[in-house]
Length: 114
Length: 111
Image (cartoon, rainbow over all chains, first blue to last red; front, side, top):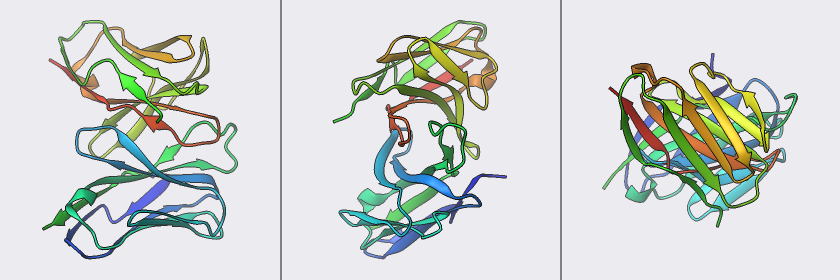
């Protein structure tokens, strides 16, 4: 089973609508990272969350990490076609032997219809 | 800006050929990673390196080897390419305890 569960697997929204993507772990996390990937390209780093309850925003994207550091949500306000792509969460488990390796979700594919 | 570059965006090789994929980062990161990405399977770690000449196997190292002779450069080697190694290969670098910065990816096709 996947160590990081992402939901939904895919999402189609109308331009201007808000949306939320979730990333859940069964283990407490040392840190959680959100990336965006355009089809056929590399991953672009969006945000890093390390403290329980932390919230960060960049333009119209807001990410939160819950107090238990096991779940994160990524919220996009007033979506635009430029937001389309695959969103991936990666994380370092808190009790990992070394904290160099990330575990990954399978990604959420987002399409925004004009 | 952090920059991670990969030697090729697209590569087509024949079965049995030796393939070299190179990755260079300019942020003096100690950690470097090679992943492959396949539909439905997500990102899978092949190898990573936490220092020059040091390497550790990831989740799927079979059929691959790596080399890190300089801190900024991490090479992935397919000793004898096979069709099941057709994939998107992504390189990343990071400081310990942080997420990684990724290169643009190399889409390798083995025929």
